[in-house]
Image (cartoon, rainbow, N blue to C red; front, side):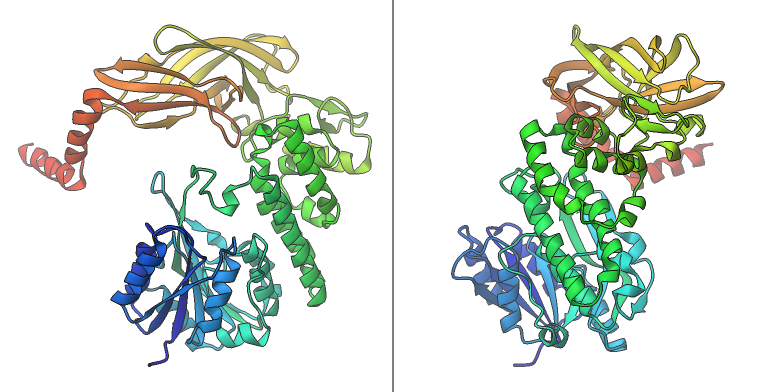
Length: 552
């Protein structure tokens, strides 16, 4: 048999439906001299039958079935490495794909210069809405060859093993295999590969298509999407400790601050947005696992974080679980704390008192947020719904409390507006915010969702209302945070002749905004939307413009 140039391993477990798509993406590669190993982690569905059929259709496909389920990705990858015949190796998950030129481009980079592995860009595709983004685009923007990870430690953020093509000789020389029996194996394997590689090449071309299912059922969600499990936290921290030990053993302890920053900015940050939704028992277990490890991280790693993230970390380390929930809402957005306290020197701190410890004062100081002086359009306010009452039809009465810790708003009543834009036309509902005490305002707004002007074909989607404030001709729009526990409210309405089912609910993730969902029903869904979709195509629009232009 001809020796293949590259072996691509497809790992699979109970994924008979998507396995053919993954294998088809390999059979369509522009570089054809490849070996395809389907490594089955002892599936119990129709995967074996599907895999055998695929192997029968193409002589390049081999089927490997593990004698028992390993519960992870490492064992099926390692068993495939053992039988791989090619000098270069790649890995693919059964729910993803390789772009047609992935193998050709990565192999060409190997042949251009002898390196230990090559890597390229990863395209992420959201299954729910089709949105496409590039994973860590700043790291793969240009073609370059690096003589080791120290040349650019930021690459520790790009810890996917599937975006790379490895020289088999490199893996064998260092006895490098995927760690079995643990989750987040990619992070440890990639850290070791980066640390051991003498040289590796980065190309800007897409070499992997990663399908993301953010709303997958918990039973089928990927390991990264099982953050609700406290064991998931323990697994992630355990892997970090293994990476730390490897860096020391490999003489690369100098990378620790960069690696710690990656952990805080990526790994911890993945949990931070969920913290407002966790109960006391879960948060206490989370702190028990996380805090001892946080205490080992380099201070310089904390200093590189945005201030709101440092606040959440410090409140967790200090055991203020209620404060953690409060501070974690709105991370990544200009959402203010409810309260700020200044010391004798005028330094503002998060919360109702000046921190008692030196670390607390360093981490909770809000001076760099410029609460009092930053431009009004980017100022920090906090808008919370304190009461939500349904009215007739699709009407709501909201009590909104606005916190202004920087005292940017003048004393007295404030004119505000609630903004909502289903479709292309914005609905603005004016209301008044009255002062409660310095820096705190409250008002009521009556929102009738039937007043929202929808397109003829209706609107199918989700919107999050915003609160707009104005001062001296300047405007500020901010998130409207909802109570996290109110039950979803549903009503059927007709607006402009279009029938919809409208659902009002808390967002359920990240900041927890007020969320309004429109779903066309009846004739709108069955007739109007299909007709408008056929008409509203580029060719039809262009033909219409051409005809109207000729008639002028």
